[in-house]
Image (tube, rainbow, N blue to C red; front, top):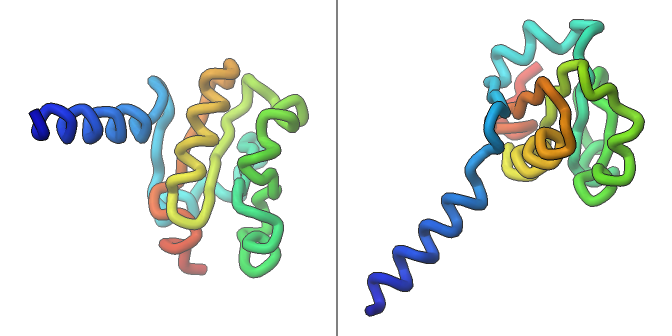
Length: 117
């Protein structure tokens, strides 16, 4: 009986972490080639304190907890690249954006922890 509960918990965690259908991912090395593209919207979903400590200048700070109220400032038909510290919050943000009807959403694997200038 215990193994059934454990399997259900593991399945639930995997299901919650799974990216929404159509969300792409990109490494920080690949990001370097895309960050200056004028046709891409770059969003950093970390807290303002984390963002002010270190950020990529092309990324606009929209904390994850404010994303749902600030989605209107973004263009749904233009690519959105999302980053956070490790890739977990940005994965959640990417899922939110995709479910809200954004067509082209990309999550940065490894986040700012993997970013090297």
